[in-house]
Amino acid sequence: MTTAADTAAEKAAEKEAMQAREKEIAAKELEANKDRTGKGLRVFFGMTRGRNPQMIQYENWNDSLPETLPATLSEFMDLRKITDEKEIVKRLVFGDNEILYKEASDPVAEFVDATWPEDVQKQFRIVVRNYSTATGVSIEDAVALIKPGIVASQAKK
Image (cartoon, rainbow, N blue to C red; front, side, top):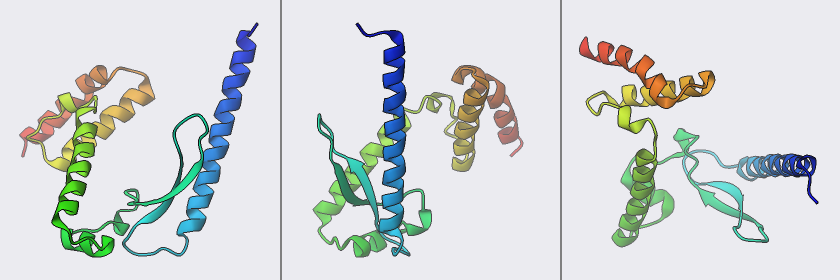
């Protein structure tokens, strides 16, 4: 019979193992990317899905380092060595789908005024999420406190 203590111990062990794996992956990524400078792809490590996950290595854009990302379509094409229009469109569609999903799944999105400048919209989202998390209040309550100030500041412009 499994007890609550056994279950808690198992969960703690799983969490510890996940943290150790994340540290291992981060260290491998640092080592693999130490010689990569400038714009271009970076090496990432992850795990396959399924019952017996295996570590995989792949290249991807590192959006946490904006200076490594291409700024124009021609720069993207040069960095990726892609000239086929159909391939470029496919990548644009997949990327756009990801962006659209991310925007649609944002719980703060319904409270953002589309007339606000993009930087204000972004800051509003961040502030609402941070306030909600830090204080333990709902997104709606955080919006009720924060949005009037944003609206007032935008009305002055």
